[in-house]
Length: 350
Image (tube, rainbow, N blue to C red; front, side, top):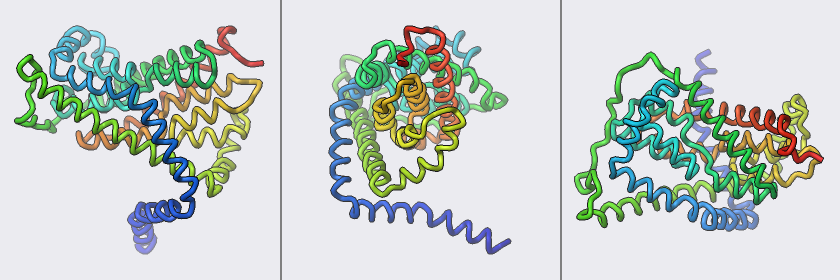
């Protein structure tokens, strides 16, 4: 028994270094296709992510130096507390998370935890439902760009919001018995003012821009990394092997095996996944839409690691986020299926 435990311990200890070594070797073995993937990832980041997210990141940073958050807390506490069991200030990351998309909600929640605005348990509840995909991506990119139908984009956005609200309500009981406030409060830098005014506007603006740029470069790094990982999995045949294993599960739900690769890609990285799923030719296009609803709700491993890189600094557990996103993907797919079968004008099946 001791030898077995020791062997398992050695495997756990060597797993990550082994994966990194294999990844490095694959970078050399598939250098030609990897170069194309890097260019694609950089193009996606520069042309889509930066224009849509950077202004919101800067604006959110600036809002943190005003009294907007405290005003929202006073106005909305009577709604946020009984429904989601979080302070009224929690409406701010929820609203900004919906407007701007990943990973804005998590960034604000981490700031709240660091500033002592919410407890650790409240931060975990907020993290589970305030970090969402934005309307620019869902309606613009997925609905209009991929499905060529505005109604589909609006439907996916509505079910996305309904699903996150459902998860927020479910998580109101997450560690609800604990009342102790967080002991982790990050001391503000003496060089950075706490409130913005005309006299320090330039200083606050400069700090907000730098903070936003750091976050946007972090997102770009993850996009490029996972573009390469997906390329390696495709060219090595590993993705096809994994698709073969999940095919029986898809058959249980009456889903064709042709969706397996797209689903796996979406679980790894959201944008590539929804593009893959939307491009699959099928008379029952509602299947494509429902699967995309799940992927949009889940967000993908790439986004999860982005969130982990942000929340780990504030010492917030990633566990409730992962559970919440799995639930949100499931609820979003369910709500989308119900809408498609209830309202005929939304169904694009041939």
